[in-house]
Image (cartoon, rainbow, N blue to C red; front, side):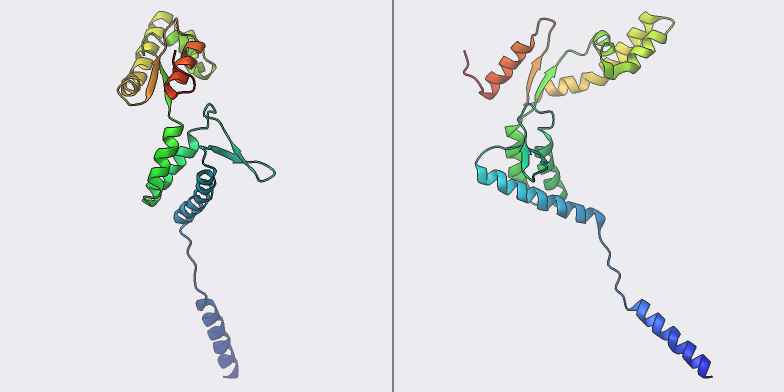
Length: 195
């Protein structure tokens, strides 16, 4: 009997000690959203206090923030994070910041009529698949025509959407030079005086 009572008491002690702990559930997604909000709040406070339009990219080894110019390929990431923060939180505080930072790093599209793109695409290292397909075909001209049709279909809607948007777009031609394009962009954004 004493053994049974001891076993019962020990079981009760173990049972109550295990049941007494509260399980803490962490909402992984909300936790990450809160973290992004905290980080973006710190950064936007720094940017707004500076009175400049700054575009953060990373934190340097010494703890300072590395800012990038508009020409950097990552320049749209930070404005995009403002839009994501606004969309994820619904907090209207982020909307004017998203608009402000987006406008400062407004996109310039360099576009080309999506026809006869095969030579340009096959000459690029990131389009190896098109080149391999054409070179392995028994009828190279038919393969080129198939690729041209596919590329046109993939690009035509985006091309037309950009042309009908409010963004600056510059159509490239065979005679376009990098200097001509840069001059148009600079004039549009007011980097240089218009001649």
